[in-house]
Length: 113
Length: 116
Image (tube, rainbow over the protein chains, first blue to last red):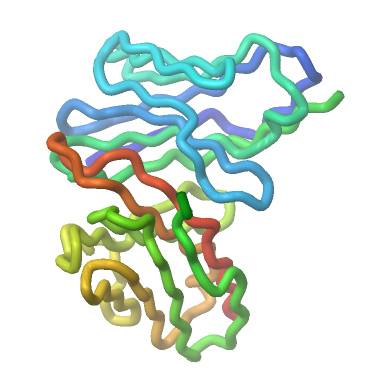
């Protein structure tokens, strides 16, 4: 079956620090990969995605590269801001799952001024 | 464009009581999903509709959970009777149908259920 594993959290950083949140996956078939973000009091939002190997998804200064050889999709940002404080979820879907998303457990990020 | 609407936002009930959640997807979105998000975990799909037909309900506890999507628009999710372990946030999402299958999912704000 499909599964997603995220790094243990929570993660606490100072403003302008470099961020990495690790994500690895197992999947039957060829998955599409996603990062979702949940800001305090808000619903889940798609942050970025990649649909094939070596694709790089990017948005709002965040990036993640689809690495098929290591089955990974790590999220990075060069300089975090206080406004990036949120919960980040890695997720995948496969053609056989017809759009169904399988999520990781989430990583809480807190950025201090 | 209006987003996915859910109500109520919060609900507190006693165990063995019944509860229902409502979802109104984005206009024109054929696919509707219900996810359960237990505290500290990622969302887990309960049921997926394509218009008013069920595509996947393999993880829906059918002895107590039911869902319907009459007329292929609004949807309700019901729990009867509730157990303590049903305490969670229930998320509704919807997506457009594309030539490649369901497109990007847009999530509602969720309903936080507490079972005492």
